Length: 119
Image (cartoon, rainbow, N blue to C red; front, side, top):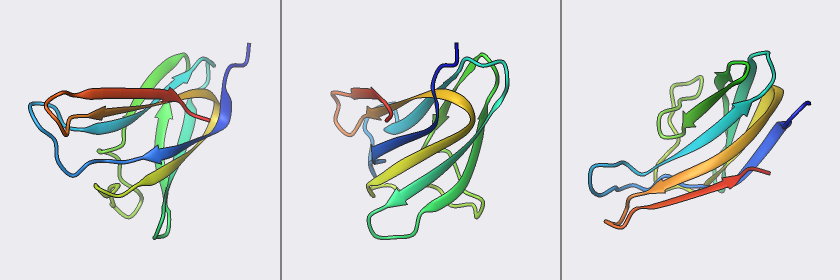
């Protein structure tokens, strides 16, 4: 069975400027590749007031998962996603994949975890 899609959208992204406690606030794109072939993944990050960040590459081996931490990725020019700025994400893959978006918010001592399947 062919599971997933080749293009996914995550409209709500945000990396807070501050964290509290031992954990850093972060977001991740959780990828599941059920095919036997490696999925070559390209991310595009969109903003409200600036040009997109393009050509952020990742991969997910066949029949594996990959948790892509958005606070650690860089584009081809060496830029990271800026903190304190809303953004959206387009995930494009060479193979059908399933994409989940997770956010760990540690801006308060009562940490929160949010997760949802991308569109």
